[in-house]
Image (cartoon, rainbow, N blue to C red; front, side, top):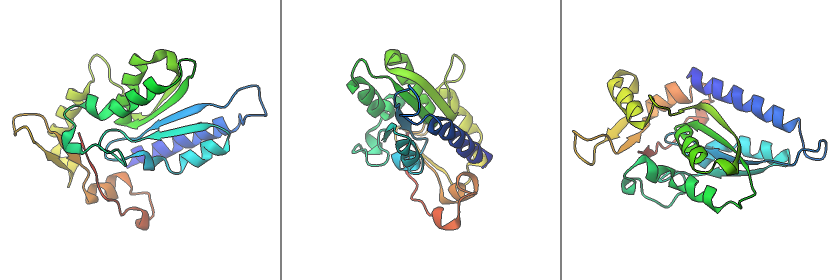
Amino acid sequence: MYQIWKLMLLVSLLICHLLSKVPGTSSEPPKHFVLVHGACHGAWSWYKVVPLLKSGGHNVTALDLGGSGVDPQQVNTLRSISDYIKPLREFMASLPDEEKVVLVGHSLGGLAISQAMEMFPEKISVAFFVTASMPGPILNVSILIQKALRDQDSQMDNHYTYDDGPSSPPTTFTFGPMFLSSKVYQLSPPEKRIWSPRRIL
């Protein structure tokens, strides 16, 4: 998918800019980056970015949102997008008052960092939306879900579950292997395309 290529380009440019300001060569102190993954992913999706930022002397936290990666919550216990974002809220609340972080959100992670920006503006120096959802007065979670449900043809083998009944919004979503291979990781080497899809809200 063109979107993944854009993501990698933007992240690479961001990293190059930040690495050009390696601590010790300027008066700028190291930054604390908080990386928030996108839909059906986890903190693991930042595995190439984390060491690059750390090699520049920066502190990096890659978080797992609710029911993702190694987060202990079961996805079927998450009843709202708020439950899904809770690990980021808890992390931000735990930061010392004087610490400011750089938030980076990809895809659905944009909704998470948007909420963190509203709740903890004093703890954020800047936020990057990397091909990410940015809610506003017209665009919110409900609108995104409605659009995705109307656009079923592009969903391929993705799967929605409706634990609250067919007339309620979906409770989970799973990327299908064909969708991942042809729309998300199509530029990745074939051996890297073997992923276990995860369900999310």
